[in-house]
Amino acid sequence: MKISRNEFGHEYGQGVYRFGYCEYAYLERGDSPADIYAQGFLPHTADPAVRNRFYMARSARILLEDFAYTSENRRIAKRFEDTFVVDRLEPRAADEEVRTLFLDYFAKRHGPRVMPPERLEAILAMPLPLHILTYRVNGELIAAVLEIAESSFGHFYYSAYDLSLVQQSLGMWLMLDATRRAKEDGRTHYYLGTVYGEKALYKANLSPLEFWDGARWNDDIARLKALARAESK
Image (cartoon, rainbow, N blue to C red; front, side):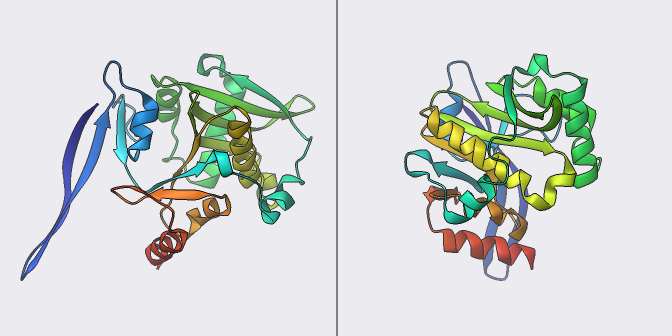
């Protein structure tokens, strides 16, 4: 694994010495994706022209051995229990229907610049163990999840779904369902992406959760919530 750092910002002067750097990692031949995730890195796909790069960030993961639904998790889980037919596809099998679901979802939910077609194609072509979970009702595609997974870990990378179900917490249900599947498959950790800002704190509804604090995996969830809420202010 190769590490690089780019200067981001600094406070230098009048007795203040603070310097910020973005840290990136690159998988090399023989490297394990599980190892790079365990060191606080996530796949970097903001620039479709950049391949095989990971960035260090405040990511969160679930310790699957002790994962179990809370009472709130069970309440959400019951809403869609036995509703979907679930299939697992390889990226090369992603058809126009799957692509349209992701592009329309991100355009309406987050704005068209977040997931343009070029970025989606770059993600589908990533040299990582990526697959697609599709959720259908009577043959109609309702939701899909892009997941990176090996025998020891999984990463809930991106999801997209019918926005008419957003008030029923379908997005949260998809994350719960994927985490449950990861535990059933015998994995040890399940990564949920970054936690920045109060809107990302829904991930703290899964337990036991820990977050990368820049040096180690930290299980102080009160600290995580304080950081995220301060950022929203």
